[in-house]
Image (cartoon, rainbow, N blue to C red; front, side, top):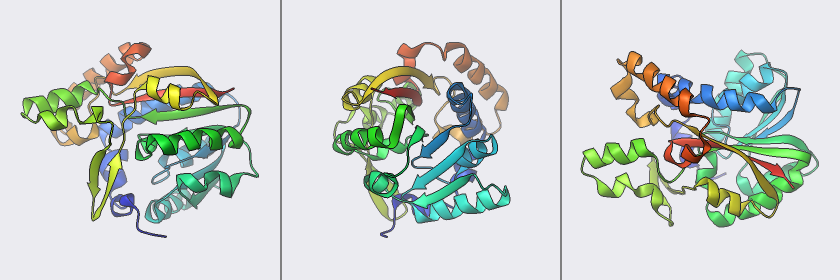
Length: 263
């Protein structure tokens, strides 16, 4: 398998995001919304699982998880994390978007889950194909639960405007994708508003739910600034919590939760 962009990031991903105060806070909001759909044991397919933080925790709660990622090194880190938790109800597989239906079409899942921008690695054509694939992988009342980077993150706009960088301030509005470099590998990141995802998945799914994640809590690239200002981050977290029910603010946040139900 060819080197993947996130191979170079696998060793440091948890330190740079998962275990940071911003990462923990944003993940807490996500898990809070996800818990509404996990009132009984579920069979979950996770895509772009990274180092397996969510998969391991969900498995510890009694759910059956098949977690996938295109990065072999991310999967290696995930398996080590799972081994340390001695968990047998989660399985990690290295596979990309295009192979999901081919590799797992004999299985049916209750939920297909992608956290923190995994879908932003796919262009619109790939997402359209995934919509059909996901429809075949889900059971009759299955759901998609995605956490996606939207087009109008106010934190990002304000930060780069103050630095005088207009191009970066509004980079998420690009329809061509934004060139992203990790290590020696470059790839495009694509941003989507909730209405765009609703349209792309509309043939097979109905929009059920959307909420902002990181409206006041800043993007993770601002972690160094907040490292010694946890009091301020807690205040921002409270503001986030107070406005998280306003779905129309979803596209303004760093990420948003979107839930789509199978037609």
